[in-house]
Amino acid sequence: MSPPVGITLVGPRAAGKTTLGRALATALGLQFVDTDAELGVRAGMSAGDFLRSAGEPAFRQLEEQVVLAALAAADGRVIALGGGALGTATVRAELARPRLWTVFLHAPLAVLVDRQRVDGRRPGLTGLPLADEVATLWASRLPAWREVADCEIDTGHRDVAASVAWLIHRWQHRRTGV
Image 1 (cartoon, rainbow, N blue to C red):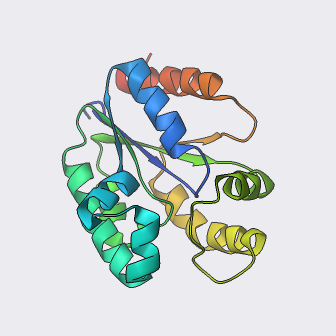
Image 2 (cartoon, rainbow, N blue to C red):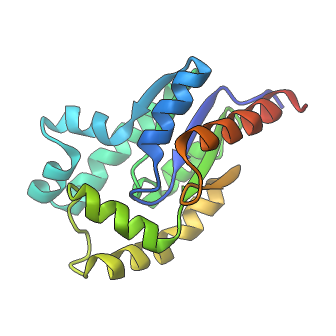
């Protein structure tokens, strides 16, 4: 089996996919792609605004198109996927391809809630209070994240530099077997 040539980051909102993805791409000399940002470009507004204005079904349909396009061009890239991007079997099947190395980023639920409270830009998806929404989405999406992951990293107790160093070590081992 040939080594993977692209890195994908999956996990819940506020796990650090964008922050860590940018830093990892820079450290490895790869291009960084944030599918939420790409979705915003296609929609002509931020991903959050599109979700609020178009509704979740339209958002998920466009998200799938954006994610599949990004995965088709994954070589030499670090790609951060939105928290709900694994909702379709088509996306999960693409992530299972050996040319991709998929990392599941996560943090304790309390950390995810705190990060989302501080950020304040992400629209609710369930109508539940934030802590309940985070727990509900975690429970429903966890099997998909784990299904596609080649490795996992808890970003709740590591800073970005330590996380990047750990991931580079794992990436190099995956690519070379050493």
